[in-house]
Amino acid sequence: MGGGRAAGGRAGVRGARRPELRLPPLEPWPDAELRPDGDYDGLEFRDADLTGQDGVGARFMDCALTGCAVDGTGLGRARVLDSVLTGLRGVGTHLAESTFRDVELVDARLGGTQLHGAVLERVVVRGGKIDFLNLREARLKDVVFESCVLVEPDFAGARLERVEFVDCALREADFGGATLKDVDLRGAAPLEIVRGLDRLSGAVVSTGQLLDLAPALAAELGIRVE
Image: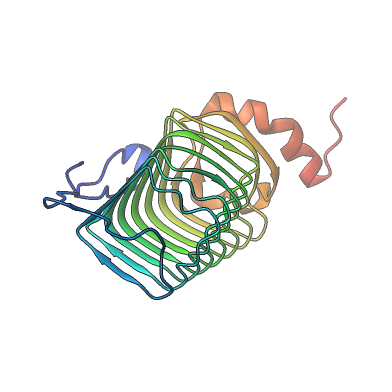
């Protein structure tokens, strides 16, 4: 969904390329439990309870996961390709060092999701709410956060290139040690950054956002405002 073309692109910022997703006819997932290093191709996981299951290293290709519970699900080093994930819910999902390419994540309700060291490319996160998202040391390229709420997301040490926040609440974000290039924060409301203001040289903000960030910027630079 989306045309694989650059969106945005205002003020010299290169817009993110969105995924092009055309899922084939899908077969119902026939099993009740994930397998480590499992290979899942052209399957629909609907209302599956994946709580606590071990799918480390699994590969999902042309899949739809809809309404699934992922509390504590182990999916480290998983590869999720050309897939749509809708209505996922859960706390503590383990996705460290995983790869998401050409993926839509829609209306998720997640908390404490571990994506440190992950690679996200041509990914749209639309709707829903994600608390305490751990993206430390991750690589994000052509990623759009749209109409969603992110509470205390951790981008510390991450690399973000062509990342857009569109009608998105970004609360108490940590960009410490991050590297940003063509990152458009203008659609974030509110825009709250608790760490890493000195790392925003590759981002664009609106005039209003700059005024809101001014006290924190002044404190970061050691400027007294009286």
